[in-house]
Amino acid sequence: MKRTGLIKMRVALLSCVGMLLPQTLLAAPAGPQQPPALITDVELQDGGVFQGTVVDAAGTAMTNTKVVVLKQGRTVAETATDDSGRFAIGQLRGGTYQVVTARSSGVYRLWAPQTAPPAARTTALLVEGGDVFRGQMGSVGMFLTNRWVIVGIIGAAIAVPIAVHNRDSGS
Image 1 (cartoon, rainbow, N blue to C red):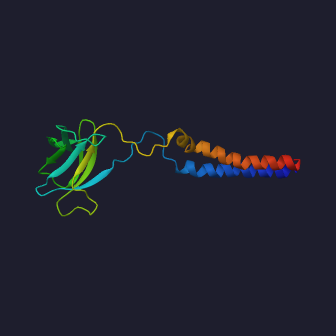
Image 2 (cartoon, one colour):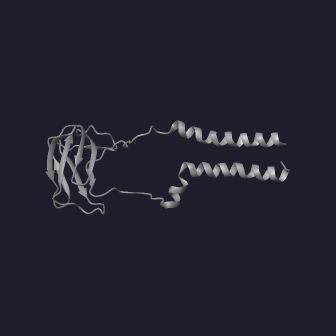
């Protein structure tokens, strides 16, 4: 009887270790990491004109906002938005550029006219202001996505029936 209980306990322990092991093997290496920059494809207009709009988080056009275009960390062009929040910069060639304003930035892959992929946009959109958060889960959602909480729930779901069975069988 004691031997059966010991075997059940080992099976439960191995089950918990088996659930934890894949998580630790797939975990990212320790240390600060930045997510990769999202690159947006934009088709240049005739004459290498790059067009875009700068808005705030509410979608209101940002007038007279300085827009700087960088390539490999060097300033390529500068302009300011008009009354509609729009800007246009000419004489650009295809390639990857960083577009920066006072409170936002984006990375754009610019394509020569008629060469852009079908999903490419015709203008860029920069949103001024803080981070944009979507799909907030709240404190309960954050609690239930913690892997240690999930492991604890699964471990309890395995251990409690074993303990009840052992108590009922007199072991």
